[in-house]
Image 1 (cartoon, one colour):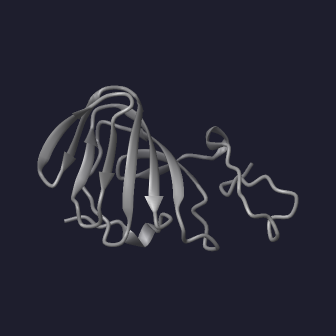
Image 2: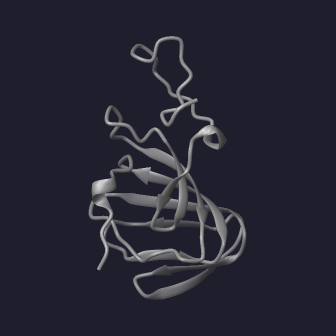
Amino acid sequence: MNATATATLDDRAANYLIAQLNEIDPLRCPCGFARRAFATAENSVASVHQVDIQLDARTHYHKKMTEIYVVLEGEGSIELDGNIFPVKPMTSVMIKPGCRHRAIGKLKIINVAIPAFDPKDEWFD
């Protein structure tokens, strides 16, 4: 499947989308590498990303997007507005617009972006 990774009988008429995250090509992002599902021009509601956090994650923020992280693998920390919190599998974090954040350590997470991910809404100080 391609980056949209949809599987429907008729994409224009379907009330659903299906993504196989492990079949989506990873893209470099401030945290490491992300496989982004449902991040298309036609969808502004939400997107879901499987992210492999690398040790060189960069602090960034979003002006419009809320993110929900769910840690799947690894142990490390998350920096939120300068405060550092430990994370491990099944830790969930809601990151509101304007919160400067980065993950610390080697982690695998699911990231739900609301509204859907827009690369123009990634900001660095």
